[in-house]
Length: 367
Image 1 (cartoon, rainbow, N blue to C red):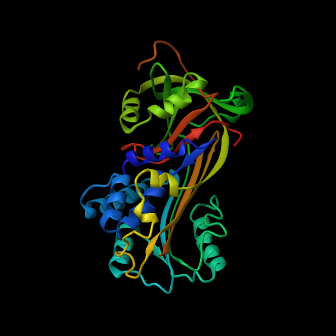
Image 2: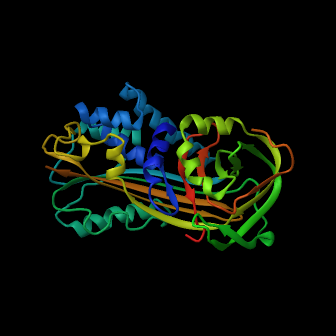
Image 3: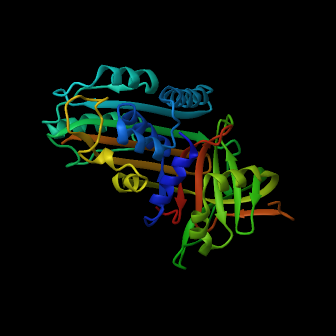
């Protein structure tokens, strides 16, 4: 997965109101598994939207290598990071063995047959797996009514992260301060504070700060517009090119950091955003998923995604899960102050490559 898909999906979701947070990695992994069994225009649309290369083996190995890199970061013992993929086929419709081999080999998939004739039992089983694999932060991913007797397959992906800052904030200096909202009002929120060396950069319109986690395998990138009203413009300017330019323009400075403590959860249905990115056939009877199941019609029915983010003095905790159901038929000139007392963008990235695990915006730290 490249950051291009992450930013494309962000631009679709940013049109929603309020706080925004999601895991593009979670969504891409679920879709990449379906791409592994897609053919024709269906496969082409998925490949284009996900920015996949022409060689399927290289693509699938890329997801494997990315998963293994994250596991390696976790195994260093500095952060908690869990990634899990699962397939839940209907017992009545056996999947193509070649697709099952691909899912196991490249995505480490748990494959469990269920009876979608008993919608409640199937939903309970899938949700329990998601909850277990996100440290109980993502609950009820599949809601009542999401499944039916016509459901043939659910693809689920879960990701959970918890890490302490490499340089923690002192809770004794956290104070309630005003946070300026987009509508001109203010809210009182706990504002954390510390002053030390961080990687920092700025343009005429915004500031960019990197906060590393213990072990330096992952980092949080905070992008703060210099004026409250400039958040929409900042979001519109976000691209792979601008993100690369902003991060490469960072240098180490002593930075006076003020950051709100916050916790919130988000919930999205991704059908329409993904259709806007060009994935149309996959959601229609025209879908060609004959590489997954031979009997048709067989198409994506629903993709739901939930995410969770908590930031405090010790560090951050984030979780996300995606379920796809398939149905038949510049340099500062003086002391640097980074005061995030108004809406900002936030990304959690792998340190060396900058690959995005989570991203979103904080417009109201109260949730």
